[in-house]
Image 1 (cartoon, rainbow, N blue to C red):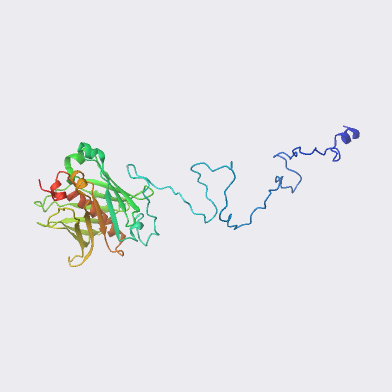
Image 2: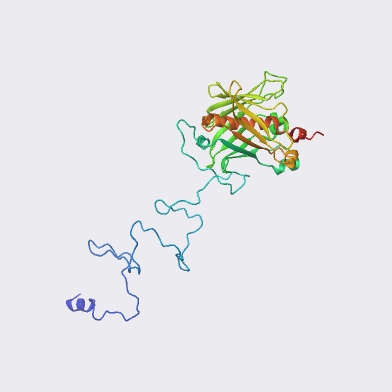
Length: 336
């Protein structure tokens, strides 16, 4: 191309001025520019960018204008540093009630099995057995499910029985079982193992026993039934099979509009340090279902392993004395 053509094709600022209102011709996105050029930044905003640490709009800010894009449902990107996360995903067990708040996990104490840190800062838990509609309508025993809450009503754990149909309906309340206790992330943190043994007081050589594991597979304690002709008695043992505490129930395990207390005592049975209470749930629920409510009280400074063993003892007591719906006179105090 000769010099004359190059001059004709070269841009002329005087003649290339666009008419008023015509959109400006910005360089394409692939335009790189000369060395050191950082690229086109676009037109300047009408308002300056707020500095770092800007606290946000003042109170009464009307919000974004109409048509402002809203993040889609399930948007999981975090906000600025320090911005609280409002909706954290938690485990909702199948069949469990929705919308029940979980207890936030406190910092774990020293030598605490994972998942037991929830018990480190409480001295009371509430155990609510869920009503199984299929069991009420058909009479067939189903796997038990329990909610374990703190005194504020926050769910600490969710427990579910793992058993087969034949074992549940042939062995009844004396059945062996594996009870799995799950935390708010759906992780199994405690496992209860009950072997098949006779529950009659006429056989002192074959008494009830429960093993508590935390984490699953690691024993942390045992609940051993003691033979007594009149009283329900149990011994709480640690992982070394050493006796730690005693549990003693009333002579007649029945109630009529009242709670039934199983006292937790020292080894010499002179000092009461807590109790496991079968709470009265109302005549209809007591008479026609085996869904029970319990309260467990223990010292705040008790070892978290022993607190977990107390929770296991509550389930063993429920199966031994309050699981049979046929014994309504025992559950309600109404003799027929």
